[in-house]
Amino acid sequence: MSRITPEQAAKLEWIRAEVEDGSDEHCFEVAAGEGDLIHIRQTDEPEKIVTTTRAKWQAFVLGVQNNEFDHFVEDA
Image: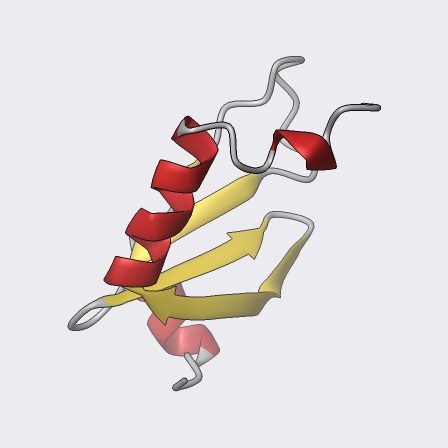
């Protein structure tokens, strides 16, 4: 998977997930990149970016919607 430079990351339109308590700490952000790339980062470490494809991102989102990952947060 290709890496994204800080300059490229700064030009992206990052969408921040809403946090229940309204804080801006440790938020999850997602941005569409060139072609079919999707970039994911956390606001407290914006230089660490995970890049995946749109198809894999869609599969993940569908998995979340279908409760496939609920066992990761059962004790939360």
